[in-house]
Image (tube, rainbow, N blue to C red; front, side):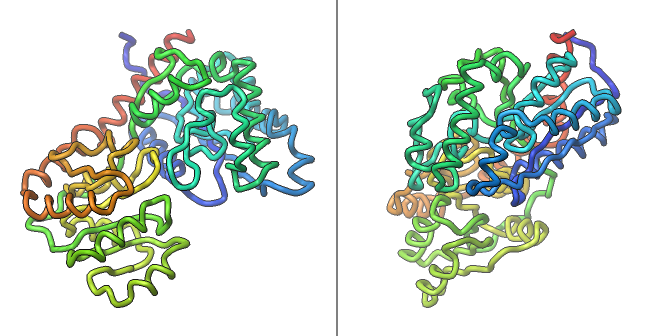
Length: 395
């Protein structure tokens, strides 16, 4: 066992997409936590300006494979900050795989968090036509991603992503230049271990995201169910509203998305269903603390939904699809219930089960789940252990 290292100098490297997402939340929370624990943390930040089509993207194609400017930026940051370890969160596309060559040349240990399935899937979600798809999972050169235009519905963009991941799989970059891969769930780890990346189990470790402690919502709860998220097909929104429209159970939906206006118009006479739009984090947490349960009907595997662990933080049970990460996070009958993915009848039966069997223990167990797995201190103990191991092996 390596003695605990104090005052680590950790360089985060993150390439942000045009819209903020779960990855950005994870990076910000982890950076804040490590600083609070006394470590020096710097963030080398890249931003994408990739449209997916056009002459400009074609001219920049080479830089997506190896970006010399990004490599120079990293070298300069290493020289000034002198990190003990580099933690990569996302390098697509501006940072590029060039960063791994720089770290190897400087003999710096590298940890890579796999927030999604980009290394084995063009659209990073293992999803097509709003349902799970694993056609490319075991292919060195996943041409189906190109054939189905899985990235931004663009043949060029999909071919580019496929070429980058395929080229570096063949050249064994992912296997030989990254010291440890972090996955957010055991489900994701098993997918990667069975994939064309050809990684060993020793190269991977499971470390879930964490969230702040929002406090246990008082009991008894108000009589409504809650949905928080994007109002879109892949989130199972059609299944959700169809199910509640067949019952008198009240549903509140927080969030926005491409299907919101159409569904609001369609359900304007359905008095038990309310669309309240986007809300601040404080307002969302307030609704969670009052809700009977959070309903999470997603049709795809998901990564590590913050909505679920935030719900657990407030002691709110979760009714979720029996699929992917939801299958792992929610324990049926303990901190929530499962229903068959995409099945309105199954969801309706589970809601009725919740109405009949729901008790205070579900709320206590939801809160216990958070305290056992998703607190800042629990996260810190796991991440620092990973850093210590990787630094020790490199030395």
